[in-house]
Length: 409
Image (cartoon, rainbow, N blue to C red; front, side):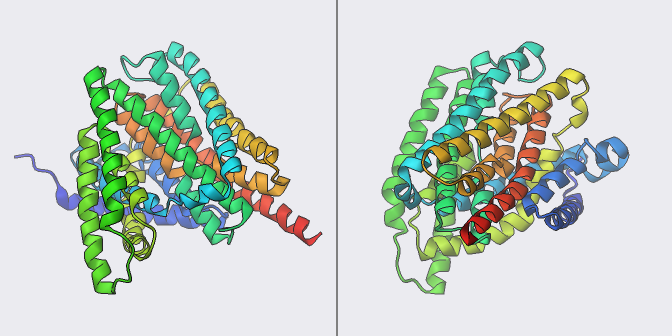
């Protein structure tokens, strides 16, 4: 009888964690965040490198029978991760820089969205980039949404690590990035619902999402209101919170909105305070150190750069990268300057908003699983995500050096 080699899964996990650690170490030496190393490690372990150089070894390490298990673990990691992203979402920041945040966010959404939508036209005509039955309209919306997403969690970590929290540039970047990602996820939800091809299913998704948001906004703050709990009480309340997370992820998956949406919305609705901080402290280490690397590798197993085997494929890849950078960074910089920010702060905000990171990978995986995009476009967009995320750190550091010199003057 053919049984799933579950024991082999632990070898896979060890290989994945080692590869991610090595790549993250190398990237940190170049001033890059660990996320970049993990993204690259996932691609290297997939068919783009390991599968091309040593196909037998690749199949032995990642046999098809274990991939579903790897995917399930990765999805649990993603759900927990998006929950912590929701917990870190600061709605209060919007009130501090309303005009600038909405201006930068709108520009950072509109410009890359339009560029992505325009690029989808020749991609549709070329063929092989989208799933069967995907209309030009759905292709345009998904491509535009994928172009305008921001790596909000990475943005938040860079701002905290560099001591920019509470500064004009840090506040503006956080507020704009959070608005960007919420809008991008709403676009994605609409496309995923439309792909079902059934008006009832689309309506079910929309009504279900509205009901879920209403329930979370009404009852979650009451259930988990702030109090001076002891460590033991916080532990018990975290258990209750995880039960709500599981129910929310199950419900949003049932309405075909994916579990990550339910996790994020629940996290946003939890009141900020001791419980939210406690949940972040307890969940983040396991998620980022153990579970998320599995998602990076699962994404890498579907990244086949060799599919881009013609001059036109690489031309489209170059156009997507250029469009993503010009649309996101250029528009955010221009909007920030228009709102009265100085050059250094505007460049800081633009560099952080331009990074796609893990949020892009999540969106692309949803698109691939839903049959919206093909592995060919998936690989193209992965390259865009890596390039734009690589750009963030050096441009950010350059901007902060300029800011420091201006301050000294």
